[in-house]
Length: 210
Image (cartoon, rainbow, N blue to C red; front, side, top):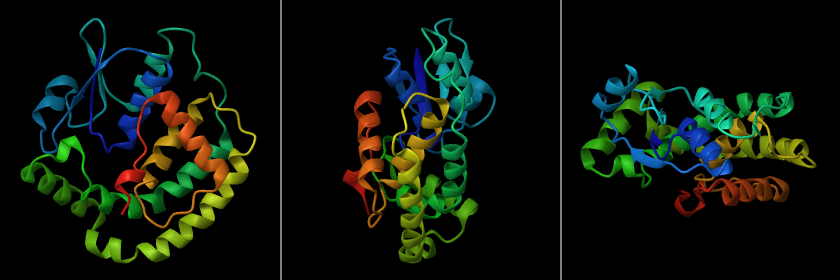
């Protein structure tokens, strides 16, 4: 199988994580930012992730891909959702975007390997989120607010047993946040992040924190 991704993309991370945790062999294909032709040819629109299945067909939508992968062998993500984790992720997502999106445009990802691709990404995100430099300038206030939320998450994670679809949705948010300097991940949250990094084979972004 092939998985078409952006390395920075939290939704692509869901699919990558599921494949890694299920120990499924696959080839990664990075779609360059600004390349609309490839995804449109495969699924009719510019969106990733895209999974090329063993029969040569293609599917999009991250959670649909996760569910497909999970059914290849004994399912491990089919248990009940953790409503508290899902609610935390929904709440943290809106604030998180203000922190990690401007940093993504400056970070090192394969899909941004050319000046043209990086500029296409910057323009796309500026259209969606406004002045990216202003967002970066506002980071201290956003970091303070997110640190409060991370303390709340610590209480939800403590004693939590990994294994459901809620983890597949939560971990990519935390991975995205790991690129933000100044965030204080409580020890129980950091252990959760690092354990899934090891088992899922998808890297956290602490080495690019800014």
